[in-house]
Length: 310
Image (cartoon, rainbow, N blue to C red; front, side):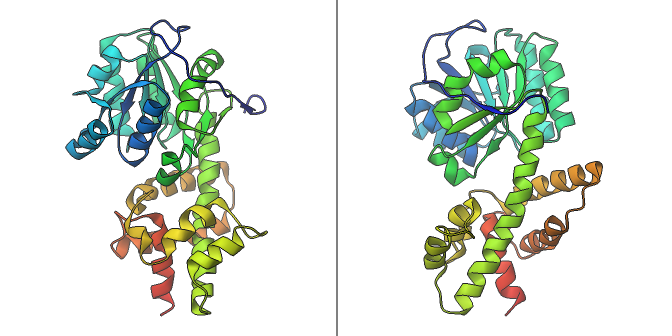
């Protein structure tokens, strides 16, 4: 990485066009769990938000929240100063990059927040760069539930001037932003964060299941343990979902999380880093898939451990 991380925070401002102009028009590409929460918070912060998602139900939710629907990524590019991408996979990103590039709006900024391979993000960046469009790698730390409350951290990487210009937008949907330097450093930090999330989520389930077997309700254990040395954000965020089948409401679906697990495993192998704790979590998440939890929250690892020990 280039230089020490710096927090950047600014207040939302307004008015259109040009790279150094103030921003008021934001396009949200992908309005699933994370994208919709970000869109709602941006609207609350005073931004005009348009959005596109191939899922008609997602578009209905956006319109119900006060956003304006667009028919494609190209339509978003036509009238946005900034496009924020929250996408499920590399193909969606490449298709979107080609559509946006074809529009050729040179003053557009594209903020890629998805958890994807750096090589795939770099390819999309180069497609856009050929048309004079700047793209940043800005993955987010936080769950869908955290996104609702602006409890997200932006791992921003790419041109420093663009990161600075985007500060009001980032503040519109997050609690903090770190400028991590060169493009791709955001994803590196995100994979480090998700490595910890994978472990902490399973360790939370282990501790709460132990307490439940002793007659201690998970919600009581979360309250007490969060205040001590054993506390973690996953205990606070996912712990409450590990009681009364709370995992049925997803903030991060197990099926989508599998993609993140694969990216972490590939990064560890490439860097030749031994990771016995991460390796121990892999079969737990695989078992969650096998037990039908693909559409459920990753807090469903509690159910996996419970069944393993019953």
